Amino acid sequence: MSKFLAPDYESLVPYTPGEQLNYKVIKLNTNESPFPPSPKVKDAVSGELIDRLRLYSDPEVKQLRKAIADEFGLDAENVFVGNGSDDVLAFSIMGFCGRGGEMCCPDISYGFYPVYADIFGVNLEEIPLEDDFSIDAKKYCNKGKTVVIANPNAPTGLALSSDDVEMIIASNPDNVVIIDEAYMDFCKTSCVDLVRKYSNLLVCRTFSKSHSLAGMRVGYGLAQKELIDDLNKLKFSFNPYNMNSVAIAAASAAIADNDYYSKNTDKIIETREKTKAELAAIGFEGTDSKSNFLFEKHKTIPAETLYKELRKKGILVRYFSKPRISDYLRITVGSQEEMDALISALKEIIKELS
Ligand SMILES: *Cc1c(COP(=O)(O)O)cnc(C)c1O
Image (cartoon, rainbow, N blue to C red; front, side):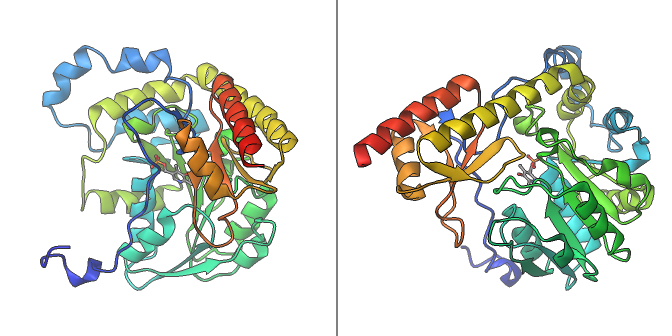
């Protein structure tokens, strides 16, 4: 730390992203898609667009907001877009909690929520998950503070029912409820339809997981116009050009190619279920994940050992040395070939260690 960093930020503990290595590994640690983006994305980002990069991007991001709105039967005024959904979450927590404000989220969830609370000076209440890692929706009702929940949750993969989500939104009419649906395409119980009904709901989504565009950095928020106007007010006060022209073109092409992405999503769900059964056969047990990752522990071998041994064999998974979840590995569901390689590596490791 230099002597110049403002005291406000001295104690900041940054988010720790999963490793990105520049040599070839089987990468099952950051929940990316094993499939390339739609061919329509490649068409959209070539040639003419490159020539136009001398111009600023559209600060209102009209093309992409319209494309996203069309997909959900909403209007462009109901869509905010950001440089990854992390950007959308940051503006939302900044804007709807405020300095010295209050928010709550589960104690085991996306690692960025506490980091944003910290950097924006928000008091965070972390509500413990139940022993089986589920979220008890009643604990999020009538909170009198901003509520942030990932549905399905990460890293557990467990989803709340649509009724529970609506109960939480309905019982907090004076606070914004942020439902982070980063993995919802693998679960298919989205609460986007409630946007028309509730003025306090903000649904956050991303192109990084189901839409194979993690490197492009595009996420979006869906809400009634007033909330979206607030987010735009913050964005235009901070970084009006948060979306670059290439990202806008790529994501606009991607969101419209449902055929391509729903096939990929179905394949990942199928591979998820198959892999879960294969893991169970070699001594793992895990949650009923509704996302594109599995959350699993082995009955005898510690997760940290498995993580290190897999790494030696060129397979990266995610291990969190955090209370309550240090027995578990979070394993991204990759292609069927990648999962086959994972299972045979695990079989070898288990044999060597038992
Ligand atoms: C991956 C993830 C995000 C961030 O996605 P980006 O759009 O890549 O910033 C947000 N929330 C959860 C729960 C995630 O797992």
